[in-house]
Image 1 (cartoon, rainbow, N blue to C red):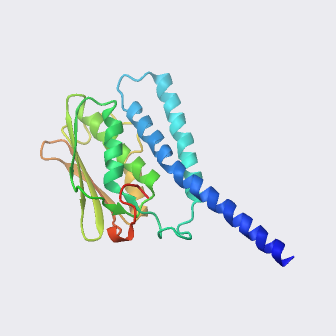
Image 2: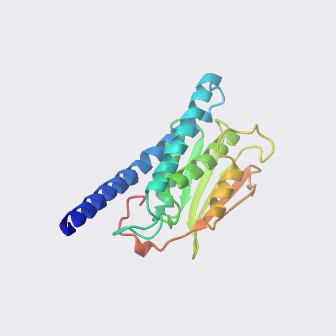
Image 3: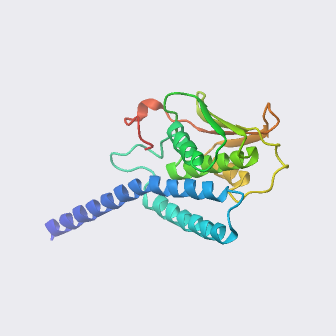
Length: 223
């Protein structure tokens, strides 16, 4: 009976580990779904039926992202404590996805090395993709958007500037919205500030808790 109990616990542990690894690997594809859907929704000539379908895709992806998040422990055996995501890598991938559908000038500046933050990778990708979508929509197809990734002692920072007309002068979009991004940032002990850029467009600055680079063994992955 004792051996059977030990075998059962071992089997359950193996099953749970397999589930956690599967959920871990699913996070980036789900993040890509959000980024591609946000890029498609930002198109001004998108037919209404297609927009409605894309919004449903986003809703289903949100449910899947929540399910994945609940299936992953905050910390597990052999895993780093909490979520640790490379902001620079997320930004570069989100910019690459945005450039597939936006013809304007989109540039990334700032840090050249990874900048790790204590935010779930899927959620961070959603936040970044939303800020980029807002900026490119405001700037228009012939405009420019500059994205700057930085770091302070305890913060990972992201600043997005566009050459659009500024806040309050463009049609309201269908993304997550700055209020929701701000709520997500606050939930992770971060903050979102916004105002005017030097060109008169919008300037949005996101600040999130930074994790020490030395704690990350992998340098070319999100997690």
